[in-house]
Image (cartoon, rainbow, N blue to C red; front, top):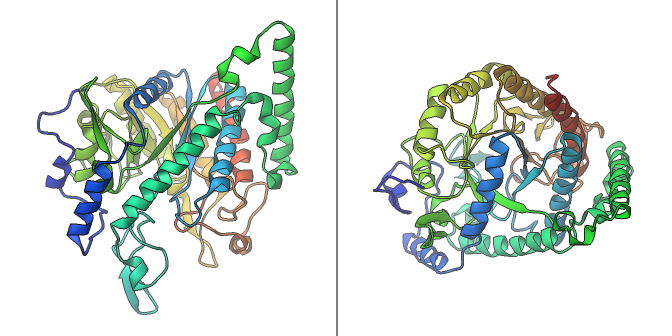
Length: 455
């Protein structure tokens, strides 16, 4: 990949850097970065090349991207059950979409590294006490006390250790038999099983099982077909903490490229996509796929300049443009961007994040999102692409496989009063396993219509 001659993994330090913490002990931070730079990368160049190949297929309209996971992973919630439950629901959603749209679904988790969160203010005041804002477990603690809120460089090493363990578990789940289509009936969590969407998934699982039995009866050797027994699963997170990202940047002598060793795909947030700022500078030199979040204030000129900076050669599978407009604005704000990119001849992956533009505060003070608004933005996203003749290539959700109560509505009909029963998120509200599966069936119907040309 072509990069400007003056790029280095550290050249971002010469640019304005937003959303980075201020550490009291610069020496401790430097020592931690040095330690991280000697540890093995979490992701390797061959995996990144494969990931770009899969995204290139999405850009051509030959596959669909499903990205989901936690708003911000927590050290305290770390464990086998949390990882397995999220992986299980992403598998279920992917099967529903694959069956409906008759195309491959590329599975991408917001996991094994999503430990940092951007904040609208550096400081937070509660009952007259002002402390640094919580910026994710890789930086400081969520408890509202001075010690917890102090940015601590040692947390970078803890984040690396948790990411390593999570990746090991994900690779075992993806390749070790858990994802075998013959086991599709076992993927449903107990709290989802008796719900309408759980029953609908059971019907789909029966059809898949019958189809496999029919193919095997016809002489199809399922035992020798790896696609039925394992899945490809990739990781992603927002490349927010640049000290951490730089420390895990590695050079691949075989290809002559630099790659980010913390995740398969890294993305720029709405607050960190300034063209001449540090985060764009860092990501432009990597071989990884790069995502860019685009809110309703993004202009066509913004998008084209970002593409020129991040992907000057228009390489397949390089960029993922993730719109997050809000349900009320998507049909007005998205089409001009689609039109400009289409006219330029570029073909990035277009993805929709229907979560971040639809966050509200409930009557009891909980931050929440409405299922119907999430669904409305998703429908508007597909309608905008149909209008402009472009491919609606993917969806990006904040979700968990666990039985939380953080988003209102859906078949569970969660209300403001119900949010407090199992509200676990330290930052943004997530769809639970039941709502995620319900949404997958809704998406499947839209995908079917889109492929039939009726949207």
